[in-house]
Length: 117
Length: 115
Image 1 (cartoon, rainbow over the protein chains, first blue to last red):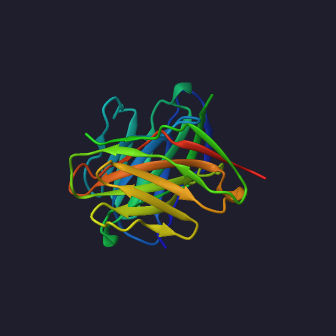
Image 2: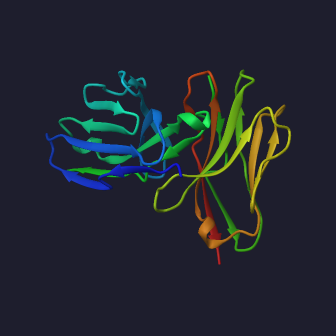
């Protein structure tokens, strides 16, 4: 149980285009999902917290107009990188909190590697 | 504010031996949880072990155990009988229930298990 999927696992896009990453909780309901960014050999950096049916809460320094987050259902959250630039290239990880399990643990997706050329 | 500190950027151990990874944290809250996550080369984050702050007994999961020293705010991870598959980044993290609801991660320790 407690499986989180991400799609795509990797994506290459051209500078100036937008790319959408999906995060799904496959076997549980996730009222809260989190989006992280991870640079090579570094820790996870929280970008934003999304709650189902409401606007995402962004961490300080994260451009909300650039990183659009939508959490339309209890099993799906999306991150759209708009007008991507090479500096947006990174590894993006989502996680989801299992509401029925008391919400203490986060289950992580396998990540999406974004390369902007 | 919560902080988590991992002071060992890299460690190595011989296969079948025991290794301990250090973690200290800072919090003013009383209701919190501590975690160790493993991130192998595949980069999939895997929960290794969890400790509830209100429990005095140290958590154990097979070859993995913690030494939770609440007064010292220390939460070390011991890996016994190390295996090659244990090679990974290990992240210590804290979570406060009723607080920010966010996981706060340390910077990680890269563990290499040598044959």
